[in-house]
Length: 320
Image 1 (cartoon, rainbow, N blue to C red):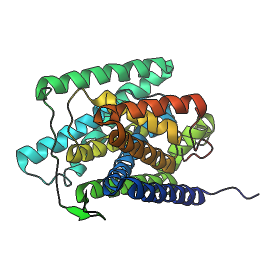
Image 2: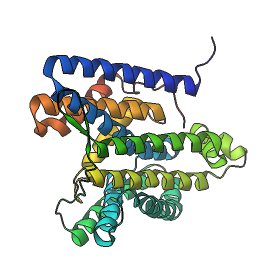
Image 3: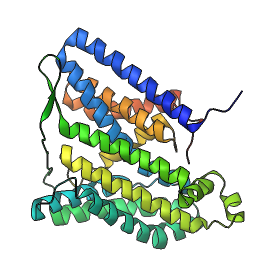
Image 4: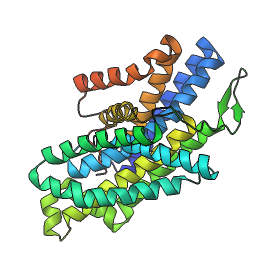
């Protein structure tokens, strides 16, 4: 039997997700009307955004085998960069994505090269403790300089009318499209460029990669920097559609962990599918039980997956 290619699995996941979305949307529309349809479509857009949030952490874990506990705080830092550039200098929020991405990328190069990569020589405990310390430092520094006041741009660019009179925000669609583009670019980077292929090699077999002349410390630094780049872009998108404050990084870290557990580590379509599952589940939970249970849904799904499918729904497929 011929092996299933990455492109085939990508289409398979895409078709399954689309079919599930169409069935759920039709059923919800027939049972509950246009409000349910709107909630599900928003959940899909949010879910694709969650996939974007998760892939940076998944990349770092796939290469370094260490969870970056500060990932949530780096996301919030990216959100603040976009917020302040837009508020103080009047820049278009979407134009600030490049500034946020570059700032977090170079910050990742510095931290990865001089802090995380050397710490990995002592095992997984030192970088784990360091990332925990980074999480605390970033959260408290942001709170000192920017206070704990919730902030957000809440950009509105009009809406698309849906059957029944409901309207889907164009901003949510743009954020979802940006997430898809980001995940696609990461796939191209991993499969078509030398650094991406080297990154995958180190992730799959570090010793064999060393024998081929690939510097593991350099690749670890690149992986950490690219992971923070995605955190910065995700944070920028977050500031456009949601409110945030310095203390909410751990909430997004929990959602990211849920998406990774759902989709499996190192699988880009799995991150998108896991994000959509979580986003729709949160949206439906909010619809039926109120907004107070929205964040609870993620952790319930997280526990269920750990109990019944701890390797993830797409564990046998990996890009890195």
